[in-house]
Length: 164
Image (cartoon, rainbow, N blue to C red; front, top):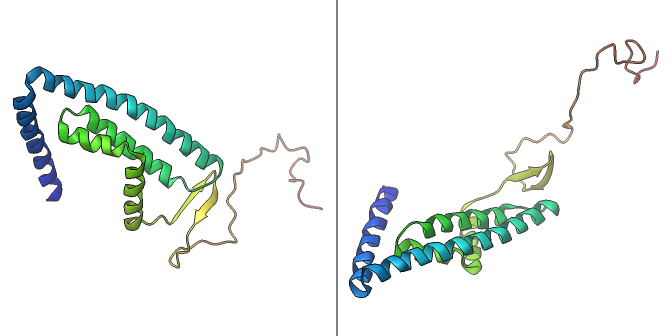
């Protein structure tokens, strides 16, 4: 129900703001502001997105938890969608999401509500929290194998790992 209210409230707020700003400034200055915020927002999203990608690459390279750079990237992507949507309310929230301090605050608030159990990179666990319900067998080793045909074997039937 709250999602329906959100999708009704945002356009109503945008229309009300367009009427107020358009009545105060006029049609063409209002349209110029909307176009200017879209262009400026696109530039800032591109700049902030490159920084977020750099942070994400370094977290993968250093085998650190990538959840914060991923969350920042998602918030930057969402801010880009808001800034390209015509309107003053969505632009204000979109520009707010481009402020790194606000994104850090939003991430901390999200962290309180979401718990990361584990993540892995390249098949090895890079970060794990203790979860008593998790059934991980430390005696199991993941691996890859390929069947070898008898034509490829030098020993004609023996694997080379056993003695006769």
